Image 1 (spheres, one colour):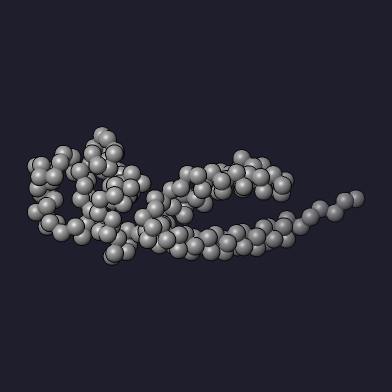
Image 2 (tube, helix red, strand yellow):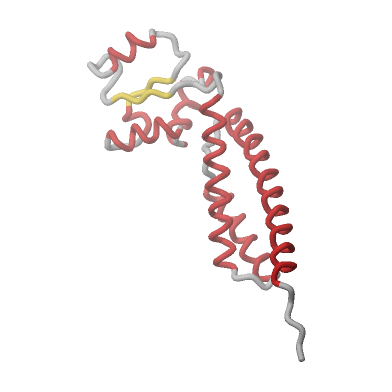
Length: 165
């Protein structure tokens, strides 16, 4: 007669592994803070699709080598990446030194620009760019680009007023 495994003992082992996974995830998220600071200093976008693709390719290969379903493991890693990017956004928005990005339709001096100029003054302590310079249309996408610090917007700054951002 075959002895059945002790279910409670198996579950205890799984819970220990779960704790190890959570500890590794905590360490990974702490590194996301460092990544956010480095990206902010370099005016780099939060998402780097090329880097993410390379990472996911490597993870799928490693999963297969470990006898795991590469597609299921990729799904988990995509969640890790999304968590990391969300944490980077959170850190950057909490910093007092993060420049404010304001998008407005039209050109400088337009009706939509005047309230921004009145509220923020003429100093370039904050970025204020016509939505058209952010290369994002229509207005809804311009607003989203302003909120997220889209790469096109950061590229605009590298060329026009890099020292202020």
